[in-house]
Length: 53
Image (cartoon, rainbow, N blue to C red; front, side, top):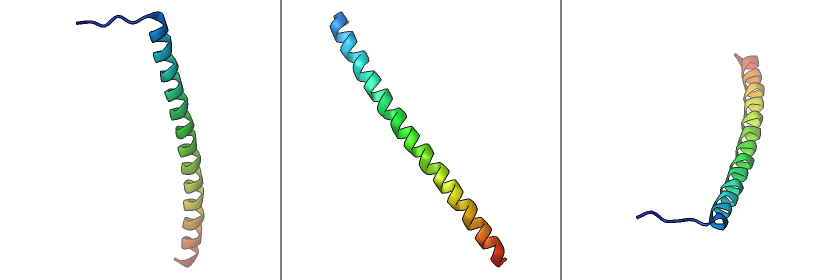
């Protein structure tokens, strides 16, 4: 049994999908930023460790 959607229903679904996509993009941006910071910190630590080897 198939369900019929009105244009209004479809517009609402698309709107919710766009909001979810925007939230995911923001989260991904934050994760990328954190990853870059971790990479920089790791590089600094490697340099400091190399001094003691």
